[in-house]
Amino acid sequence: MTELQLNYRIDEVKTSIEESIKKEPEFLEQYDDPSLIHEIASTYLLYYDYQHTNINKLIEEQEDRAQLLSLKLYLCDNKNGLKKVTIEADNNEKQRFTIHSNTAMRLFGELFPPYFIDRFDADCQISIDQCIQQSSNNYGHEETALKQSHEDKANKTEEQLNVIEQLLSTLRIAKKKIVHRTIYEMYKVFIKKGYVPYDNDVDKYGFNLSSDGKFPVTKNAVSMWIYIVLMRMITDDEEKIYKTRDDMQCYIRDALISYKQDKYYHKDDHPFPYNIEKLL
Image 1 (cartoon, rainbow, N blue to C red):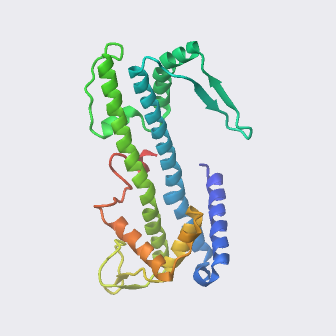
Image 2: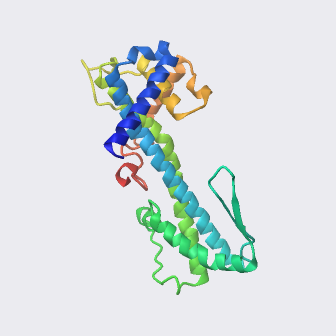
Image 3: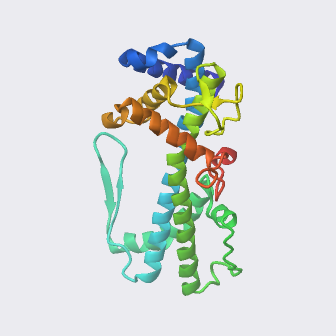
């Protein structure tokens, strides 16, 4: 993203925040400082929007890879091959293109899966070899693909599918947890700006900041501000946006606690099997 594009996106997010303030003045108007809003917009882009977009891309790629490998496995075990193949165009007319003759299906089954899968794998952001290497799962297949038996090929494909499912599970968890990271980083902006009171006896949320022996608390208007602004940007579900004060504060508190606990979440996003921040 160029600097011009980044500034444009920041302005878009700032506009969205300002619109939320107009809709919820009783909750949000007290924190309408332009410099605060700019930093919150930048934080949202870096820790949520950017991460969310890329994790979605990774998930879609791995889901496609799993489908292609399943197709390859199916064709290994089924002599009858395929009945038809349909491709849908991405336009308003919803055009579909279908092939179904015996000759087309035989050639498609013989040529498409092996060559397309290899090319697709090379273009994916995470290759199957990287999946295997980073999950410490060495298959030990030293033979070339031509020398492998039918059973060896099927077993390797099954193992690859298992690795992909493990990766998909990790990515889906990470997709949920980037919300916790975003809330933590937004809270740090408010703390830096002096909007968060210090009244906890312990560093309950892992900010590593204190004042006169006290640590930041979350039962305050800042939590409601972050909750409303963030929910308006990440969901269209009105029931999630409108909660009681206690519910909003509890949601933010629980997200910060989850982020602090390494047992459930790690500060570099999700280190096993992939660290998204270092990968991108």
